[in-house]
Length: 84
Image (cartoon, rainbow, N blue to C red; front, side, top):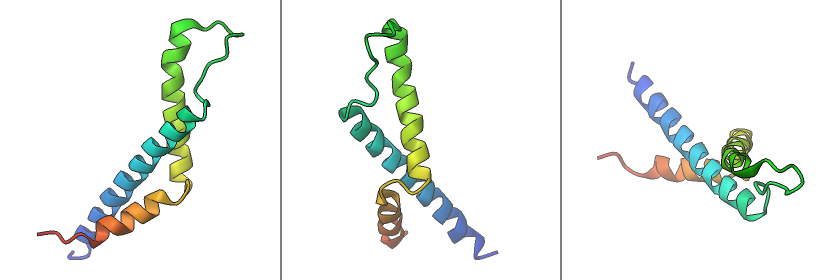
């Protein structure tokens, strides 16, 4: 059972690293203008509000599929931090 604790910790660290990369990617996509709604559809403020949710989910999907490799780097850096 001693092997279960590190595996669980690794799972939590990897999930945190993926979420951090997803947040980073969402900001990058937003800056690139991906979340901007076109004026032609006229969705109004509601469309603008929900566009951020779509952008975040797109970024999360990208990160879960490897993203730009940031999550893996973060994961390995977090694993090196000693648990005192």
